[in-house]
Image (tube, rainbow, N blue to C red; front, side, top):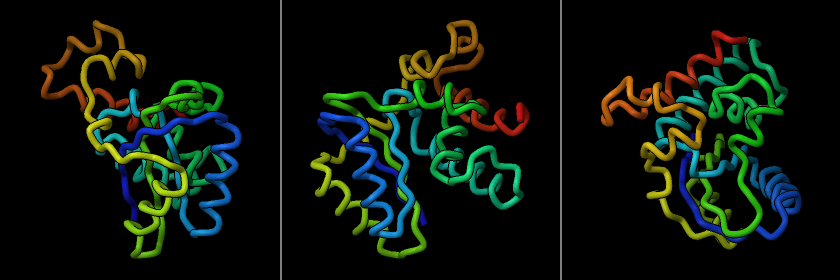
Length: 168
């Protein structure tokens, strides 16, 4: 099972936040990946990244040794962590976050609520709604954006996610 949410938070130290996240993940038997919400274009973006990453691990075509890192690569549309992390990573200070939590536990909603509480995050799923700015921050240029109608913007991102399999 997985859950995708948007959240706002104030992150004083990114390394400390990630360390706490790893401890929380281990303690709750959950896999969590956190992104800068400003480069996520809707829940389908992360659903697609998760499904591609899961399939890559099942088929042993994965690049990394963990599902959360594989999700990061697919969400970024990249094959190298050195490109994916700066592109998708959240920043110190007031941050808009996109979070995917994956667990075999059917209590994923409770785990996510616990995460929000322990990390002082305010849920805001509207942060996941993308627009033309999201596409630009993701790295698409104006020429690429103009190839589709606004209603198809998300498809540009989903295409980048799917292209990761091809560029392996």
